Length: 171
Image 1 (cartoon, one colour):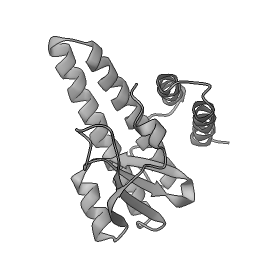
Image 2 (cartoon, rainbow, N blue to C red):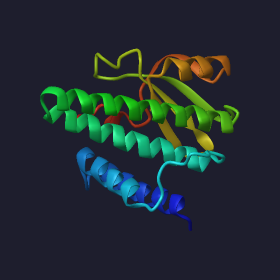
Image 3 (cartoon, rainbow, N blue to C red):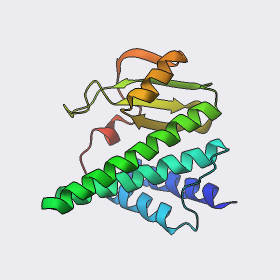
Image 4 (cartoon, rainbow, N blue to C red):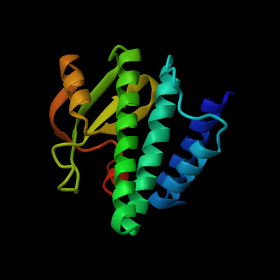
């Protein structure tokens, strides 16, 4: 089993614990961040497989969430720097998402806007389900949204997220 497979197996165990109620969303996020940082790999420069792209998505998503959470506890210029860093990580996450979709040629993917309690994300956040990898991705990127619509894998309207309890739980 390679490092990416080990990460996804560990991540699934974190998800299982979260779903059972054995850990909070914050504990899940902390465990996932620890997992991506403890691996002897960093984001891949050459993303030539879906697995590498999905790992990059997870890495950048974990880093963005950590920067954003730290920013909310910070003040002044430090806060602004952390928010900027979070934005950069979210941009890299979105590039990984688009790479995965292109590697899949948008096949066996579906996407739609999701219901959210956040007024800032309402009408912007959408879910992308990658069926063959049992992976759920999220984005607000207009670039990805345009590509999903062009490839006819985006369903208009708003649905409940497949992981609604997670998405709408504060951390």
